[in-house]
Image (cartoon, rainbow, N blue to C red; front, side, top):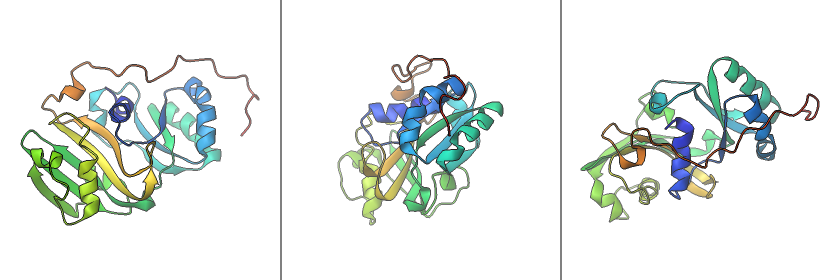
Length: 224
């Protein structure tokens, strides 16, 4: 699965994540234009065109806040540069109180978080960690309080609907509710940790995510 499909897995599991669309070319852009227009300013994450499972690795461009009037230009440039754009309703990382990664393993769960503001990249790419600890994985399903900071406990509790014991979750805690389910905790994506999680079976694809492509509208039909 590619990065966008992994985001959709989070939503399918009923866990709070972003509202987003995938733009692989400008016909995608025009098909999703109405939705993006309702969002106004957006966030854009990217992956290399045609990326599969390894899209998790390596640093690709990320634009936490893109003004509404520049979205089309930004998408055009990214496509030209060989990227697919994951365009999402804007969630400003300046309002993130905690962000990072939680590795849920068969025996131990490792929590690595950075204090906000900022994105999960502070942990996953820059290695800036303010909070790090481990707990037996079975405890995250049984105990409410595993850390002195209740926000951390809420982040762990948000993973309970995920029935797997081998994955990495990128997670943030926001000062105000965000995401499609309007909660303080948002799970950006789930990634196979390399041990063969059942969520990410080899070759598995998530169906029902994208509607058929339609031709772009004639020039001048939509003005910005």
